Length: 116
Image 1: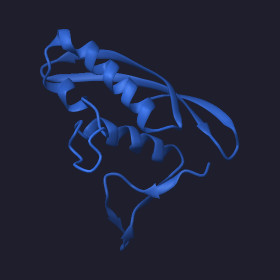
Image 2: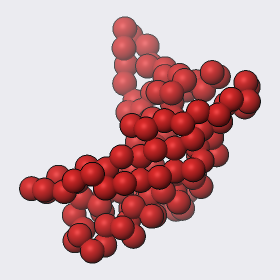
Image 3: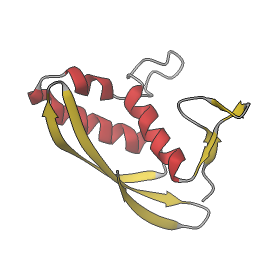
Image 4: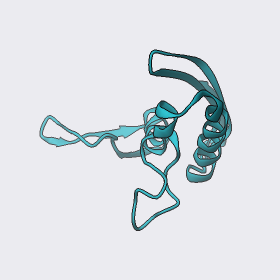
């Protein structure tokens, strides 16, 4: 698998910038999309999602926010397709959800499905 880049969140390990690769790169990409608020990046106002709003939203808005997250993941990372997000539980200010998706490696032309 040829996915390689600077780890997110950025960190130094053993005196060097931490590099991530493979599936970790895809997990980190989703993590970034979830944590960056829509419009937060001045030079890239369409990057990000309403992921943070999921924590503080009322229950009736959560399906719309999950739909936004799904659409943003598919739009912002062209390796990821067929995203399916399901709400697992919500209690005491904690929201848990699963993200299932398929990703395609261009180098090997393989397709994988991952549930995390």
